[in-house]
Structure formats: C-alpha cells, structure tokens
Image (cartoon, rainbow, N blue to C red):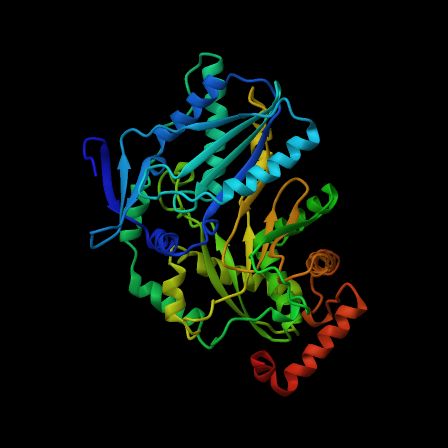
Length: 468
C-alpha cells in the first residue's frame, strides 16, 4: 500500500463489514451491484461533464475509498487524496434505433456481470453511450459498499449543479461535503447493549420466517439463474393527492400506510396472524450534522415482527405500525446479522422473505426539477438482494408501487394480483378508515377462496403444512 497518496484510514461500519465479507466470498458478482440508467436528451460539453464528475469524486471521501482486509486484524477503508474517475465512451450513432435498443439491453447485462476490485479506490464505473448529437445513455454502476439510493441521487444532483456552474463560468453553489468518517465516529458512540435489548424484545416469540411459498409458482421454473424482474402500478395524479392528503390529515407517513397494508396482505396470503418481514430504512441519523449531504452507505434492512388483530379498525392499526416503525428507526444502524443472532430464528434461515422499501424522494422528479442545461432524465435502477419479493414505493406526483421479484419463483399474474390488492386496500382505507381489518376484501372471489383455504389449513396444523 503506497502511503504518499493516503488521506485517512479507519474501520468499516458493521454493515460494510458484512457486505465486504460476502463480496469476497460470494461468486455472484451482481449481488451488491447498484446500476442506474439515465438518458441525456440535449447536446452538452463532454469535457465539462467529465470535470463535473471528477469534482464530485474530489468532494466526497467515500468515492476515494478502497478497502483493505488482508493481513490485518480488522478490515479497513483507506481514503486516498487523489483518485481519477474514468468515463467510458461509446458511439452508437451509426446504428438504427432498434439495433441501439438491442445493444443497450446486451450492454447493461454485460456491464452487470463485471465485478469491482474493492481493494482499489472508487468502485464506480460510468459509461456514456452516444445515440445522436442530442441523445445519450448514461449508465452508472457502483458497489453497494460505498453507495445507496440516497447517495446516488445526491451525486447526480451535484453533477448537474456543477455542470451548470462551470458552463456559465460561475462559482460552484455547493458547501464542502462532510466526510463519511463523521458517521463512523457517530456509530462508535452507540450503546450496543441497549441496542441488543431492544431487538431481543422486538423479535421475542418468533422462531421462523414468514414463508411466502404459497405465492410461488406451482410448477418450478427450469431456469436455475436467479433473475429479477420488476412490475409497476401507478396511481393517478388525483389518487396520489387523495392519499397524501389522507396521510397528512391522520398524521400518518406513507411508509406507515404501505408497511401496514403489506402486513395485512402477508397475513391474508399466509393464513397467519403473526408475520415477519423486512423494512428498508435510509439509516441516516437525524442528529448527525450534515448527514443529508454526506455520501456513503447508510441504507439498512430491518426485521419487523407484527401480531395482527383482525378486529381492529384499519386506521388504528396503521398508527400502531407507525409507532413500531419509529421505535425500530432509533436502532436502524444495527447490522442485520447481529439482529438475526439476537432472535430465535435459526441462522440457516433468512429472517424474512419479503421486503418493503419506501424511497425517500423521487430520482426522476429531483433531476427534472433542477431545470438546468444538462437535460438528464432518470430511467430505471437495477439492484439485487437476497430476498425474492421486494415492494418498492416511489412517491412521485403520480405515486407508483413496484415489485422487484425473483421471476423464477413468482409468476407475473401473481405479482400483478398483489399490486391490485394493495391498490384496492388503499381505496378501502380512504373510503372508510375505520373498516375492521377482517372486513377488508380481496380483489377477486378466487383470492377470497384461497384465503379461506389457508384459514382452514391454519386451524388444524399450519406448522406441519409449512414443513412439507
């Protein structure tokens, strides 16, 4: 390790340690890949664009960080003073539109398969593909150990702002970025004993994950590769306004509403009145100065164990879920592997099989609202985790729900049916907030019949049914 270019050395966060371990020993190169696709629909100055990205790398310590784990007692992250970011350029301007689209699909898949050498700083790869003089694809690949969704949005916004300032010979309108080390120091102040007590109590009584095998395909897929697909359902502008207005009037967050609905549906689908699922938290401590402008990995997924009383009014239930989520957030920095060890769920099983993700704000809206010279538009995000079913909520002006799912396990019809169940439940909530949970109806009579079958199975021996 050359020392003349080293700015700082410190330990990894507990979550980074887990990611580093799996990245070294797991053969799946896509597991911790974070890939975002943008389009740029304007002519622009390539040199200024590259300079803007380099300034962003210079601003944030996490983007100049490599990882060191050999011949040391504890894994370390090494911040370098200077790191050169390279943008790969491709020119597809001579290709027909259909061929460009085919090339893009092939390129994205190939790019996903390329792993990062985490011992080198800045595990990030940018590809800029020219389609015409006023149209480009920008593909940003990064490793989850340095990046999460919030950070990706932060970096993109900074690039756009810096590009605009440089284009007009103006001062860059950004304050110095707080270093990731500030978060490391914040973590060191946490009381681990108190954290353990909370999670042991929160998961007391649960001995196995909530299986979603009932939702899986009856005929196993012959494809062995774990492929992920995404299906979306978008609310209208008026429906979104109604939902947000309802949330404000009843002092609920959208996250509480969707987490609460998912627990109810998970209970209906499995026939159990106690369910365990994962909830993704942004992980940024509100009491850490400058946290909103800090780049790095903060995202964490927490287990939420819920006992459902179907006699309760829906609105009251959602408020209780909100209280439970707020309590968990106080300990959202806790590594999942530690939480798992404090539970009664065996280590050879995942704590949960489904995850709810509530995006804090929309990448698409944020970038478009900047209204600057660089006409960059968000297209889509690809990421892969260990869980087969992920419900993601994007709070756009037209809110939309998306399921990222393991398509060798779940059929498209099943995923569409679940999205429609969420939609119908939202409608019932707004129409009658005090409807009892047991009076909520499924979308189709077939689903009602399936729920009745599950209830019958649960009444005689649900544990046996799960084990066979």
